[in-house]
Image 1 (cartoon, rainbow, N blue to C red):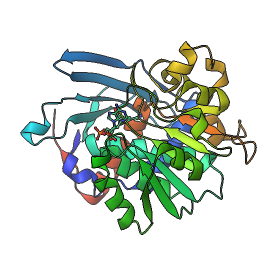
Image 2 (image 1 turned 30 degrees about the horizontal axis):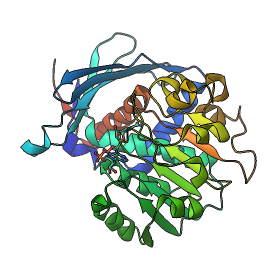
Image 3 (image 1 turned 180 degrees about the vertical axis):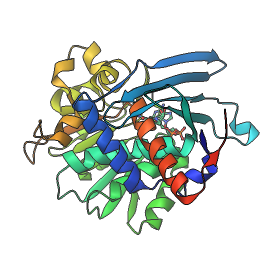
Length: 320
Ligand code: NAD
């Protein structure tokens, strides 16, 4: 089997290869060539969470699981709070093929998901990117989004204003103007909005959003989190990575619980990639992507990392 250490990932998988892997995965899911197994998520006490996201891609001959969780005590020990590892198996024999560091890959595959939605659903003339959230993931989200449209400016709002420095520095590094704004001003200017927070209640309201906006809701990946008002999902055309996750652990859980949206009104983004759904139908339509994060995304980018690491000699071979 092969080991690809966390420290090697940054030199292997870039935004474009993550985009390609995730786009192909969403397409395979919509063709029913690939499916995710039910998510396991357990509270371990003292704020610790642990879970498993797994799946099988028959077309890509990939079987695997991401084991990972959130350990709030880690930062005091100088370790990242989110920790994960991806394990890949031979789908014909079940033999373990690789163990791959999953921390950076999680950020890359999550940013790839929103950027796939921007590529397929936002207006091609989008000029202003709005960011709601300024935590660890926000920088990856912003950078991946900038590759999809000719954005001229980034505006941002964060619940904790003191956290804005990291995102504003990354925007400056990308060579674009940056403005910290209220949610009203963000919605009034942005053509594309990414929400990436751990919020337990809606920040972005339906009234903030102007016609033609594309919103990628990326922070809500578990029961009880919420970033946007359910009325916004009722107004928007809603797309997702996987409908089952969207209505149970994704942003749509709240709109579905309130009876504002039904599962059959939510379209897998893979259908747009495959051309079986037309995607955006007008320049006025509000589109919303509910990115819940599926195991197949992790498997796809980890497989890419293994291929690249074996090709450049950075994969470590061990006998199990
Ligand atoms: P982080 O801890 O670095 O940042 C948290 C962000 O949430 C900050 O912007 C913070 O200000 C904001 N926030 C915290 N409490 C809030 C509140 N009450 N109201 C509004 N905003 C609040 O986290 P991160 O690593 O950037 O991750 C952000 C979110 O994305 C987390 O919820 C994480 O679980 C989720 N996530 C989703 C996926 C996916 O595939 N969908 C993948 C990775 C992470």
